[in-house]
Length: 219
Image (tube, rainbow, N blue to C red):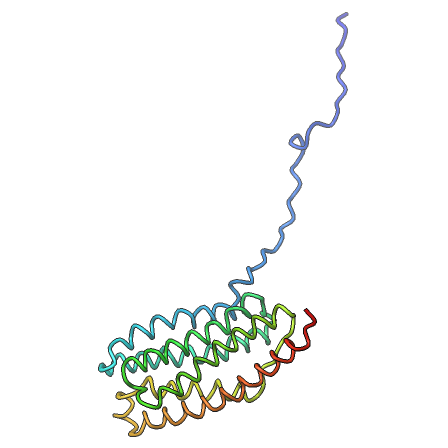
């Protein structure tokens, strides 16, 4: 009788069995592409578009289009902060880019309006005050950040931003706005001086905070 060969069955590698189902893990959206950050990106993109349109200051169509872009960008300045707070979308990237986008928008607008002679004469001093304050505050924030010191935005600073944006809106409309609302440019220039005054006030708050920490720093 032939001897029957017996084999002991042992479990083989995992491939011999039914593959285990992989747990499906939800993909986390990158914080770089939250709605709040996308609104900030939009404001950054609006800067070169508005600058390009203001290269044709005599064209009313270009002026109105530039105004539309500027107003949309100004609205996102409010919306991105609101969305970040309401939907918990605050991020380090957003906190870095938001003030940069604001300063680029205001600075580019002031430079183009000065270049096309919407802002002329002694009114240029108001633009200089605003630009110098932006440089000053940027430097102070960078220094205070190294000391891990935060300077909260005051209500006056928020009013300053609002007045500044409204003033620039009137000036961007410029000659085109005069056809619908006579006095558009004088209104814009008056508000620009008011914004410059508020700029000096808020700039002093930042300077005072910076000087205090420089004097108190033992190093």
